[in-house]
Image (cartoon, rainbow, N blue to C red; front, side, top):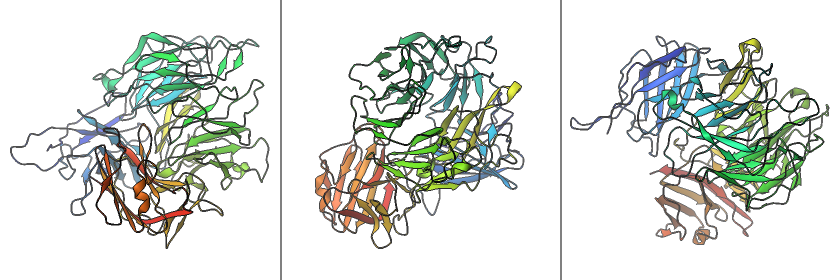
Length: 637
């Protein structure tokens, strides 16, 4: 067992690095002790008063919380050295909730394998700027890689200054200007994580790819696209683990700028479309973090050439390519789907209505969400669409076009993406099929930067919206708004699917007439063939799951971080289809066992990859009409 103790700390890049809290577990006199300080930070613009604030810390991990001794600890921030012995030694993540009079701050972090535990807290219901100013520029890229964000590239307003590259730490709020930064000046590059499978946890390398020469594109001369990529490498042990870029570049298969990029389940980066010397591109290529090479062999082509596409990795691992512009700068309506390795198309392309502005975001259970700002004021225009996991387009409840001045769409915890309309913040309600006003959000009448005005945005995690805010002569600032704090190790309430669908999200429009997924009080979750609902935000190592079967037995889907799903009740573990009353699924390491109606457990023939964490969902079985279940219980082991 270990005891976590505290020391006072300070981060020079912040105005307020608050005193450390401590947590630990009770232990015997002869137990080895490892000291781990917990240090809490807040942005200068939204400071916490250490002398007044009270903090409650919630611990989570691959364990079940005890009712008699819940994994929480509380302390005033001024109580440096306070030992939080109620937090289990198996703790893997922390949620920090701070109150000070009528204000609150929230933060969340995974616990690193060693060293201090840093948590950046954001004030509830407000946007907060981080401290350091960034030089003003256009065509800049902002990307989040692990716990860091990178601001790279672009062109200064005068064109005389070469913009620096910055790396920020989302666990402390510190922002460092790199000594060297990019080796090649580039505007509109993409930034993605560039971690190879098996790399140790911690700060992640990043790939900055493509873009164009900032000094090109004057008048009618097109921008000169760049055919290279660069690798940022963190320096473990340096302040905030900030490193710099390698001198070596990676040659791409062809020049591309204004392209899309996404990290595949393999850890490789897929570059999609963009603009080359001859115009919009149909090509895609893969950059491998192991070989440090790019390849286009065995990679599919887009049906429609496009620049500025949106590229999403869906929950299934499939790649969705949406939006973008053609050679005449017209919006492209065509949606295209590709296999997780981008080797082939997986669905027939379909068209979605275009508009003045569109944004797309992947939904946690599967499929995607689209919000469209029409080109003109059309009161009956369908502004919200659900792109279901099977590729069907379904209109959600629309937002009045007159209420949309901009579209800035972020992934969201609880299966609920967050939307800034230019006037207010809203969140998707997955079982309602529409957006609803966010109850606690920045007030445009009081907040100087209530939401993003520029298009340069990123998601710090499923509950943190980040964007670059242009403050004129003061430069650019990284601004954030925390609207949720969820952790993949969170406890799952028991039972679920008794009174409603809390903690689950559907992979398509739900609850509408004709929908293949709905909730009924008597039968619980009712699923048509192929329709799915997943537990939101959480993933599991070993677990036990049980459901009461109220129609045909649904499949229990184990969706790993990488690799194919295991459908318990599908072809890979078919005997689970026989359940008439109860279905039990247990995972221990690579082995998955199933109990049907109280009979002895049997092992699924297919095993999981060692160490794979899995998301859990229910899916309607094929060929049985409807599947249904209630009284869902999931226990971590």
